[in-house]
Each structure stands twice: as structure tokens, then as C-alpha cells.
Length: 414
Image (cartoon, rainbow, N blue to C red; front, side):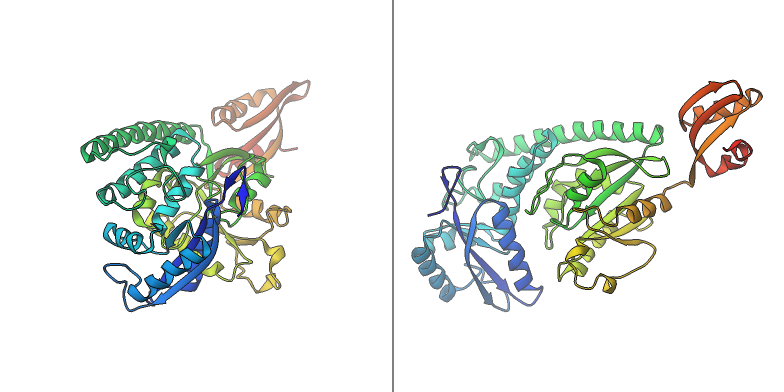
């Protein structure tokens, strides 16, 4: 038996249905990583080809008997299906196999419960779990009437859920109110950023693409960075000064996965709203993955759904040191190739960000005659002055100047 921190690591059997609607093999590989991210050990997988899922058991009676035998022989702690199961299906599968059963959505929610650190993140997790689990509480499946106790059942505070649905509905409304208050506070912060002329750059992309590693490389933010899906859940913001002297706010967001249920996207909309309101978006993908094109499509579709077609989007091909022929990757003015871990290509990335700034800016070292002090006043009013010093020859200052003022300061540039 495998133990970690004195506790037995749970063993999981993965089950998938191949109806031809999507790449079942690729989705199962992702499910394997999701189970690992939840702290369990995937010990086997079964894929059943069917025209459509069986209404009673999803997988069919023949395969279900095979699953039952596998669970007994391999000492399986829980079964995870790579699709969304109905309460009836879960109950029937558990009754037949005598093994706790969860689905893909429950697994992702479990990982969210582990990863959420901020108050808002925890509230979002609890809300999503309550809304998803409420219709499943009436059954008598193994451990389905509570949170806490294993992968797919962890929840807020490791406490049991009340079976009184009226109580749960009241709790849902309370959590929604809490999120509305937090959203108002976040909107005030964004408004202050806009008023202060803060330029925001959001890092988005498929989970495990290296977004947090890139954030750490650029800003030394100390964001959790590890080889697990959904390593980052809560948005993280850090300031970054570009080579041209312009400061921007970098925002790291939650990673995406294929077939992420819509209600989960809704539940974690706040972290995606950071991308929606950003001036520039970095779409990061793992270039070493055979499915990097699919990963980019997942992100691009979401950006389109959020109405970001007109936002500058820079495609960032990460982990290029692991790509046999990096030159085969798509190349255009809106894409860069990097290795965030070793800081390869970071200079090119920063230049791409500079080229996509919402306004054209230049960093000036100026010597203004005292008779031209009004120019300094204009620059101060725009918050562009970085430092200044009075000398015998005039006012020396360094400023970030917008294009409309270049003609005003050009004669006094050093």
C-alpha cells in the first residue's frame, strides 16, 4: 500500500465512454492527470465504445461486471467516470460495484476545493459544489450525502452537508450575496486602476501550460508552480516594469481544460473577468504537447465567448526547449516562443507586450529649461514622471510620454 504524510493514497479506476463526439483517449489522459492532481493514484482505465451512454449505468451491464471484478482484485477505493453522471447512474453503479463513484465534474470541484486559498475562491468552490451536489443528495449512494472523506467529496471546512434542501438553497443565496459584495469590491479596484492609468496584462491558457512559472519569471510573484492541473486557482496580480519603463499589472488566471462544464466556467467567472478587462492577453500553451493546437482552440473559444475578439492577444509558445523543431511552430508578429523556466525568449515576449500597449509610449530623459516648467506640470498631471531633479541648468527628469506629447518634449531630450 502507498502512503503519503501517514495517510493511505486512494486508488482510482478510470472509466470512459467513447461515443465519437471527442477524442476519448486524449480526454482519458487528461483525467489521469486530474486524478493525480487530486492526490490519488490512477491504477487502471477502461474505455467502452458505445453509440450513447446507457441511461441506467452509463457503461452497460457487461462492462459494469468487469469494473466490479477489477475493483475487487485491485483494491480500488473509488471509480471516476470521464463524463457527467446522473444521480441514478451513480446510485446504480455504486450498488453494483460496491465502490464509491464520482464523475469528471465532481473530481474538478474536488481539486478546486484543495486549491482555493482566497476567501472569494473558497466561496466560489462551496457555491459550485452545493449547486452541483444538491440534486444528488436524495440518493443513498456511498458518501454522496456528505462532503469530506475522500477524492470527489472534499468540501468547505470538511463538514457534512445538511440534507434539508431548503437550508442548502438559503446557503446558496447567502454565498451569491457574498460573491456580489466581493465583485463590487473588485470592480472598485479595477476602476481605481483605470483611473490611475494602470495597464493590465492577463495570462490565460490551458492548465499546466506554465502560466504560473511565467508569472514567477517575470515578476518573482512566488505563485505556486508545480506539475499539476489547476495548481493556480485564485487570480494573482503583480506589477512588472517593461524595458521601455512602462509599468503594467500582470494577472495570472485559472487554467482551462477541455470539456469544462459550463456551470463550472460560470462559477469561476471572476478569475476569467480579469482577462476580460485586461488591456493585453497572453495566451500561453505548452508547445511540447502533441495537442497544443487543441489547447489553444479551447482558450480562444473562451476568449471569444467573453467578447475579447478585439483585444490584443499574444500567443506564447512555452516549453520550446522540449520541442524537437521549434521552427515548425506557427510564427507571426503576435506570437513568441519561450521557455519560462529558464527565461529563454523573455526579451522577445516583453517587446511583444510593448508593441501591443494600448497607447504608444516612449521613455524620455529630459532637461527642461526653467522657463518650460509648464511641460513638467503636464507630465506630472498624467502621472508620467518617474524621477526629477533640479540642477543649475534646468529641471532634469525621466518620464514615460504618450505619442501625443512627443512633439512637446523632443526638443529637450538628452
